[in-house]
Structures are given as structure tokens and as C-alpha cells.
Length: 284
Image (cartoon, rainbow, N blue to C red):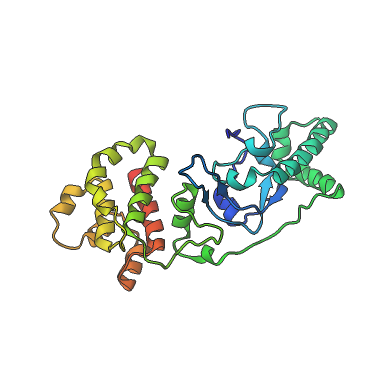
């Protein structure tokens, strides 16, 4: 499905981590399921929210006046649409669009102006609630949000680099396999930095030795990071600690470095953080 570019684009992190918005016009809770596209592809579940809000801004196109778009083509990221595409949300958005249309005529205001005015939003919400809509504010706190690696986790989820399933299993403290980290970093570059695609062709053959189903060591993680960052020759000529070298080059954060040294192995939370750090380094 193609989506409009609205004044806000609902992200998968908004969905999975139960975000509320002041301009909510619908509340969803359906799991983020990306359906199968072939007999060989069984589909994926990227998480299951408790509840999340869809903002009015998601149905207001940025560059088109006098138009509201509801349902699966509203302003969602492709992963967020795995949940927000569902019919109940589209129906709730349709109700809101109807009320907003009548309101815009009565007040002689554009949808853009309404989207940017909290008083107008409250008035529209009040009308919707009087007609039976459920739009109560909420706050859902997840323990994972307190993790030092939460930014890395959100980054990985945003780009579809992890598949938490129906139980939102982020595996923070579990050891990560070599093959998982290989594909996490590979897909990160492929999806988030299209201008750096040459890195994948240049380094893929060398790094394919890490497509193995065994726990990832800190030296292997460092080798992958250093290679993508352009330090393969320096890494090959370094007989010392590659993980320390990656840290000194700015490819491993202090938090991840200390966490790996403390436990002696690389966990999923370390991988999330290192993937984000690699992205920031390459994308400077």
C-alpha cells in the first residue's frame, strides 16, 4: 500500500510502545503483522501493542488542500501500517474526517490550520466523544523503555531489523548469534543508508564467514563494525584487541563497551546499540 505524507507519520515505535497523542482520533491495539507475500514467505509479527493513538495529523496530507485520507493509505510507516491498516481504525478515522470536514466549513478553517491548533482538535474530539467515540488519554509504561539500549532498540525496530513477535521479545540480555548480527548490520545499511550500498558489495564476501549459527564474540562484532567503517586493513594488521580498537574508533559506545566487558559476551542490547552507533558513524 502507498501512503500519503501527512503532518505526522505514525511509526512502528509509536505502535509497539503504546504512544498517546494530544490529537488522537482513533485508538488501536492490533498486532503489527506483515502478511505473507509468497508461498515461501510466512510473514512476520513485529510486536503487539496494548493500545496506541492515531493522530489527526496522520490523515491530513502535507501538500494537498481540502482532502483527508483515512484507512490503510493514511500517513503511516510501512511497518506501523501492519497494525494501523485495519478496518476498525479506518472506520474511526472516517468518523473523525466527517466531523472535521463539517467543522472546517463551519469555522472556515483549513485542515492544516485545524491540525496545528489544539483548541480546534479538542473541539473535534469533544464532538466525536459525544457521538460515542472512545478517545480517553492513556499512559502505558514498558520496562524495556528504561534500558540503556532503548534508543538502539527503537532504531532497529524502526528499520525492521528485529522481529519481536506477539510477545514483544526483544531478547535484551540474551546472547546474539553471529548470523543475526551480520544481517542486522547488513540490512541496516541496505535500508537506512542507500547512498552507501557500495559497502555491501565491497565487504560482503569477506564478512560472509559470519553467517554462522553460533554466539557472536566481541572480536567478531568488532571485525564487522571496523570493516563497514573502512578499517579492514587496520583491523587485519592489528594483533591486539579488535573490540578495543572499535571502541577507540567510535564504533562502540561506552555503555556497550562496558556491558560486553562486564558480561564477557555480546547480547542483543549491545547489538542494537552498536548498530545505531555504526549508522551514525557511516552517516556522518
